[in-house]
Length: 281
Length: 260
Image 1 (cartoon, rainbow over the protein chains, first blue to last red):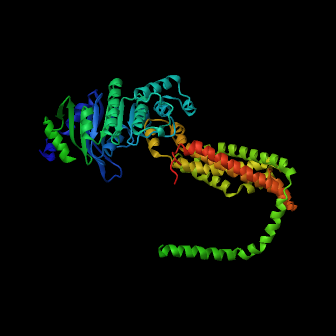
Image 2: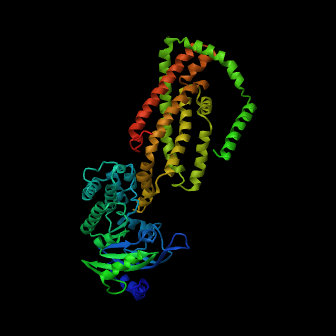
């Protein structure tokens, strides 16, 4: 089956949105979202999707497909040119005071990780607690005892026990990712956004990091939206996978054990979906 | 080498010759004057060792002046550098502030010293004030430049957590720009010791006062004692700052691991 036929068969977006706006299980909802960096070329087109609470949602696509843009829309670092986005009933916009308070609930890990390299692991993790700390105390680096205990607990959870005081620039690539995850968890988030955080790692380390996220997600009842380059990894860890190509969602599938359910075109054999992805990528 | 480079080198040489003519710089005079140098060196060689004690104490005073001037100057410069960084403030703040900082750097510390001698009278205090002024202008510039060069990725990532601007500065911008500060302050102290050594020329205290007076009265042997003390002190400071830099900076940046 060709991709065009598949897209024609897909459900009209409007009917999904009507259903999902009244669904309290939905954490993230996007309805016909378009986004552009320069006002002319659209990095994302006609994106409609709903992400339920507790889902491990994967976005797969090649470089430049618009998948990182999608994450920036969800945490309000970028605003859509057209369409609506709701994250936990709020419209994400970093420049609005009301949403800035909500931002601490979203743990965002960019591809570059964004760690402060000249400070220790513990100090980096404590940055996640800053929205809860008063200005004066945070300027004096005067963190409450229970926050320091919490940070140490999380550092242990991500497998960096004993490395609290190590300077971040001294860590390996895998360890740095653990610090970034720990900082995000320190925010006490309800949503974790991660942008290709394992794509530069070797197979073994990548799976260790993915296991860590999956474990934390279950333990803390988080929703995770992770961008991947690698379809295999997405199928292994996610409950749902959206494939983005040239700014458009071309496929959305759900994974139930070994079974793959195609959400856009009804049921489709697993073999065919994999072939479709392989042909397109 | 391509013809364009040859042309540029030719132009620079022609320019130097033309400018030397303009400022009356004559290499022949240098050669003719060499015997005079020999006289000075001969007289300087007649060092008067009794003066070493005085030289030592006046050098100590010079170092104290440089130390106070550097520390106070850096403490004032740091908050100013945060305000002068383009990535942290609006034009209304950083443009006038940068103008003021540039003005403090325009005058060498010896001109500041003259100004402060008029203000507070002769003595080391005027010298300290001069050093403070110059240090503020210099360190603030170096610091706002390193603040502007801070990696945007951690800034963006931490900003997306929803922290306040002050928190962002305290926990990301300052730690990311701090490693350069140690190196800059060491350099500034080194520079200030040398500067303070000549502030005595205008009566602003320190070892320069003795040097200029002995030279004025053609007592080169006595001046030499003080100059030797300055030389030894500068060498010691240079040695110590290399050690500190190696310990804190080179290791941190993983430099010097391969000898080129």
